[in-house]
Image (cartoon, rainbow, N blue to C red):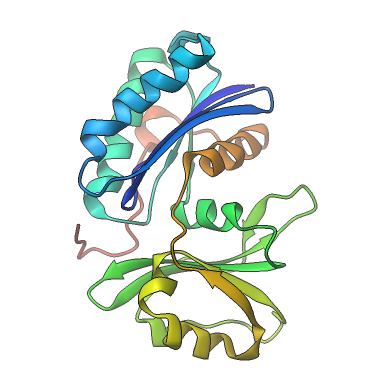
Length: 222
């Protein structure tokens, strides 16, 4: 399996090439430089592996939620690459990528991205037997004090900038279930690739007209 993944949904920008279990990646925390960086990153990982786009089996991308401009950049670039190569595409949640990157911390991951306007995007993920995160319920956009963690969850770990900005509120909503959190964690194309490969094997690829961003709210910023 050969898959190229990219993500520009938050302040971070990244690209990763997955080839039969091995991954080559580039990652940089570079707000507002996504359009400048992402194509060179893609070229870098392909060049390092001595691959061309035509040799790939599929594409994966961070479809959001996240910053409007960043999500739009990733979507547009993926649409262009898919159109040029006729490759299947697997959209991956940015929140799921956050959770995948911290899957070893607890049985449940509360992924939260700062959505500005005093809100967060969040989702609760559990880890399956294959080590892949799965959404527990739905993804949400809301104020931090509206986060709902089911009583059935006895321990969890937080990941993402939502925790950086709203630590006290989210920790309070977690009560004594919280084992810790990483507020400096961002979605990474390495984890996008892992999730995209798993979804591809389950028939999760979509046609060109379904390569769409997910914002979770109509009034978007960033």
